[in-house]
Length: 75
Figure 1 (cartoon, rainbow, N blue to C red):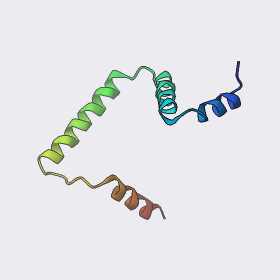
Figure 2 (tube, rainbow, N blue to C red):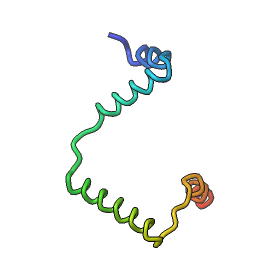
Figure 3 (tube, rainbow, N blue to C red):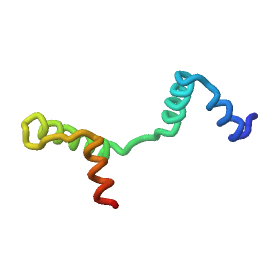
């Protein structure tokens, strides 16, 4: 069996497409059952935010702009 270091070295030598498939499978293997209440709460929140944008109640800003503002605040 390969050591973790050897496995990482092997994985990094793979072509991009194969590495992305490997990453996807590794992430899937880490996922576990999500509490239904939490999942429902997040789905409802996402729908609420979507509706706020669709109705013009809030204006979305680009992600880069939002991150720049957060960085400015944290400085």
